[in-house]
Amino acid sequence: MPKGRNTTMRLHHHHAKRASTVALVLSMLLMLTLVLLILLALGILSLPVSSDDSPPSIRDSFKFGRRAGVLGGGDALGKRGEQWTEIISWEPRAFLYHNFLSKEECEYLIKLAKPHMAKSTVVDSKTGQSKDSRVRTSSGMFLKRGRDKIIRDIEKRIADFTFIPVEHGEGLQILHYEVGQKYDAHYDYFLDEFNTKNGGQRIATVLMYLSDVEEGGETTFPAATGNFSSVPWWNELSECGKKGLSVKPKMGDALLFWSMRPDATLDPSSLHGGCPVISLSHIFQAT
Image (tube, rainbow, N blue to C red):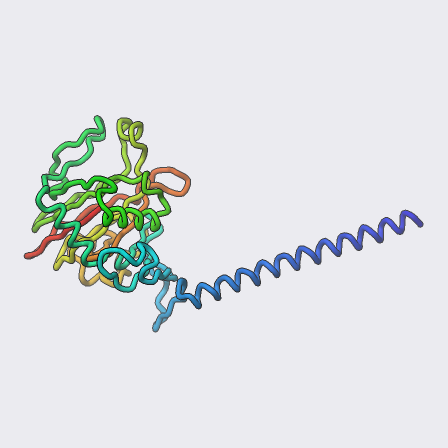
C-alpha cells in the first residue's frame, strides 16, 4: 500500500508540474502579445503594408519608428522632421535613420568646417599613420569631441542611436566631396597593430549626410548580400551606385553600419565606398 500511494503521489506531482509549465508558457505569450500591442499603439513598431505579392526585399519587413524629439531632446538646434529608422541590410548590418539632424545642425557643421578643410588622408595599414592616397580624393577636417553644446547634443544622439558610449567615439570628421571626387571601397576597421593597441578596434560608423546631391555621391556596399535593386531609390542611383547596395545622400539622414559582427569578428561585408559626385553638385558629410 505505501508503495502504491507513493506512485500515485509522484503521478500527481508530475501532472501538477506539467500544468504549471503550460501556465508559465501561456502567461509569457500573453505578456509578449501585450508588449507588441503597446508598441503598435505608440507607433514604435508598424507592420508592413504591401499592395502586391512581391517577395521580401533586401530591406526589412518591419519599420521601427522614432517620433520627433525622441533622440536629442527638445532644445536641439532647429526642428527635425518625422524620424524613423529603416533597416537597409543584415550583411552588413546597416540602418538608415531619417532626419537624424535638422537643417540648421547640418548648416552649422558645414560653417564650422569650411575654413579648415584640407586634403583627406587614409590610414597606412602597415604603420597606422595617415597618408595621402588616390583612393580618397575628398577634403575634410576633424572637430574636437565635445567642442560645444551643439556638438555634444549630436554626439549624445549618436550614442543613443548606437548604444555605444560617447567616450568610446572619435571626434566628428566633416568631409566635402566636389564633382569627380570619391572614396574607393575600403574597410573602416583597422588592420594594423598600431591603432588597435592605442585606440582599440572600430566597431561601427555613423555617416551623417549634411547636404543633398543631384547625382552620384552614394555610399555603396559592394560586398553586401541581397537584391541591390530592391531599394526604392534604385532608379535614382548612378552607375557606380548600382554596383552594390547603395544609399543615396539626403540632408539630415544618418547611416549606421557595423564593421564587426555580434561575435566580435571583423565583417568583410562592411566593405564600402563613396561614389564620385556627378554633375554640378557637391556633398558634405560628417562621420
